[in-house]
Image (cartoon, helix red, strand yellow):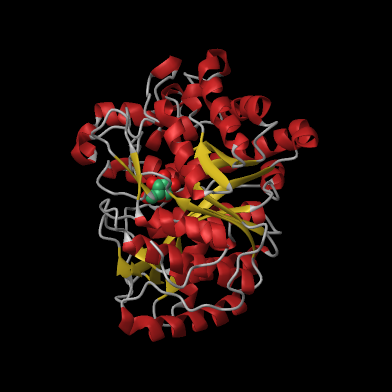
Length: 501
Ligand code: GAL
């Protein structure tokens, strides 16, 4: 596996050099220009980012409500998601956009504190259940398949009070919540994701202190969070398979990813290591035939922990019951991909001591040819990274069904969003190239349907195919040029040569 990864990395290096002069966001085509007939095109949002209605109809507070209300100075322009695009009151406008695009599926998340306001089953809120029933029914009535994420960062405050992801209790609480979702929606929802991007929220919430609850337990809290997330995910998978699957026949996964890593010059080992410390951290225990955390993480974190004078590793051990339960606990790979970094082994120890960065022990850099998004600081257009990720998944985890569950480009909100079209074009090409190279990719999901609350960046960064008038009480949606482009892709099942917008 590693040798074929190295060969691929050589090819990617060649492609990158060839494109180097171009300040590029393009990708050459390989093979069939058409997406398969049954390929599903969709678009994504998440509850806290679009819904508003933060305390409507009995909803309880999430840690993002608490954070934006009490630490507003940490968010661009002191913004909150209290109203946001107000999808809670204007879902029909979202539906109109989805119909206009003619998407095959819509990925949205359910707000846990709308269903159980204090996180616990005892607080069950029928009005919250009614809201999602309405959405699901309207989608299906219009031929749009719901793809549902159970957790997209908005943890009920009371679950945080009992320790959040640091506590074993979390597992039991999450299973009760997921069971409620299967009972109420599982007759109609056939694609589920338990968690969105645990490697991002575990690090941001429990190590960096960038996201609530601002717990700076670097190099330990983040690892406990990932471990408990994997356990809760697998426990939910078990409940679904034993109690619901026979009748409901749905599929379950967990959305992983965000970055791919390429080698800086010939540092192939560093790129592979970074992939294991990021994607592999959650994917290896679930999708690899041997299960458990990646070997390189187990060995190096233990060795660092002992050097720090500890008696045991900061990385919790995954053995026996849990290792077996987690192994194989997904029906497809849900991949989020945005961008890439070049990696080399660290010249000197980096990051906090201890930390995920220090354990990973790599320095990251950028290729000067990569096109940078005009908003934010981290997003560069690297479509070959998506191809690389698909190849990595094939090599590491074998013949998997892959659904791309997020991929998106940000700007400052212009309607004439040609850079977004360019990003979309090249990433859709990467999907086609992946299919030609043997990946079983069945879905692509653009992030996001509408401009929305972009976490600590507030409303300063826009990802939507539809703009939202945040000044108007109706929050009117207006299509951008990229909406027309995506509609054309969906109706023709190919990437248009000319952009007719
Ligand atoms: C993802 C996240 C989304 C959205 C997007 C753009 O990591 O799942 O909620 O914020 O990034 O930054």
